[in-house]
Length: 67
Image (tube, rainbow, N blue to C red; front, side, top):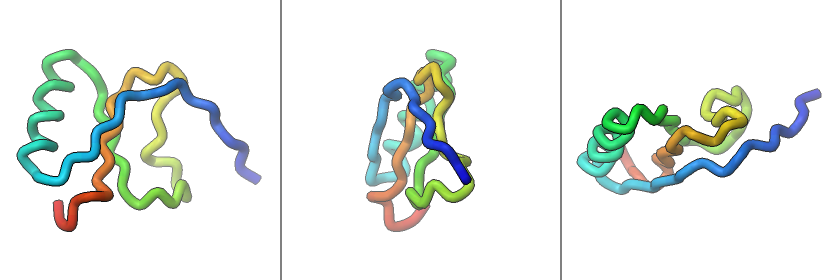
């Protein structure tokens, strides 16, 4: 049985266009902030979970129709 994780709040962005994703990636790189892609929202594999510090920038790809 999986337990729920309680993470600190992380910055979130929901770009619609590839150039916005690229801009977020450049900003994250400039500040040394890890970027976590978020897509299916199933939570099955926990691959897109942030750590407990909440310092990652979550990039939700749900509004994009192709990547």
